[in-house]
Length: 519
Image (cartoon, rainbow, N blue to C red; front, side, top):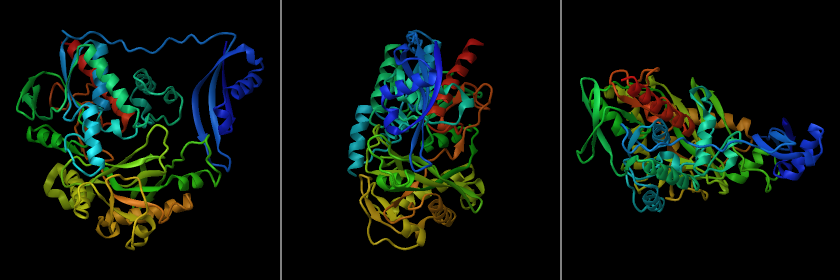
């Protein structure tokens, strides 16, 4: 017999199996020796009061043992099966490839960057501000931007597909089991590389192919039909089915698509800064002054306000994390955040961004559909020009930024390449700067102590989502004009985040399978 139980307990009890067993026995009215196992199916925290509590949903197995079948992928040997070209090895690309393997199709995967091991070396140089590789960095390389940027798996896009399946696949390849029950699952940037290596081995063992350091510079299109790809060396790869999963930072992809008369659409996105506080300060605010201790996680926050007709909100909050350089082009400066699995850094950071609409890019209207992209790139160049020292970032104390005052110095922060004092309040565009300043004032009303000079803002946080959409048929998932072209993931403009991109990749693979099966 199985019974579902909901408990609200103190954090120290939530991790004590014996106490949970005792509470579950009382709740179900049976003795503890009749409960063979407690399975956690949902875990969340409520820190709204002075004493944080953990909400648990459990299944108690009474007078029986769990007999669940282990999760497996039905991977086929695809050595001699029909080929599908997949561009990009981020979440959309990798999950498209895994689904192709299950469907009996042979994926040929192209990644502009390096494998995880080589990429790790490139990031070490980048973090020391020694060398920036535009093809192997925090955005480009095996696993895409997700590999080294946290691994947050929370998504609201339940209607897109089976989110639990995505979590189980990550678990299958090495993620901790708690991602299956946590309300806001998180893998950790220190564990993701190993998971990505396991996925790579699976692909190769099944007969798929992977080409690293192969940037795709063009499509072969004849009579509105894809007939292959062209890499950066001019080598042609024939194929009538292409899943394009290149991510939102590959701006060169949009440009070669446009030059080939592939229809694109501009779309809104958001930009701003990344703010970092001492994690102890965030803990103090969110836990109402209570000591975090060993049983509570590093506290996070989720903030949003409307300012002058635009949303101002936190994005990719990384408790116990680090700020990292995320540029993909020379002479630009982009910052992002990530957390290790234990979230044990002394700092917590988040993007704080302003919603931008198409009319906000009128100054760049001569760039046509690339007006928003040009606006984004101009701000990234501007941030670089205010430092001109590799990947060192312009920074300012938070309260100084809001009051429009120059900072005399900066506190210690987590950004490894280093920072330089900069007057962000003077050079950020008014439509972003003014809304950020007011947004921070409003955030202070929700989180007293948030607006402080102990915190620092860094510029710029500009890669929240794609400024371009590659329009596709909602039923077939093919491009609206080009047969055989299946845009997927964040770069398509139809997904955002690891889980929704992974689902989009799987859906694209299934769409390819349907098209092949119908012929």
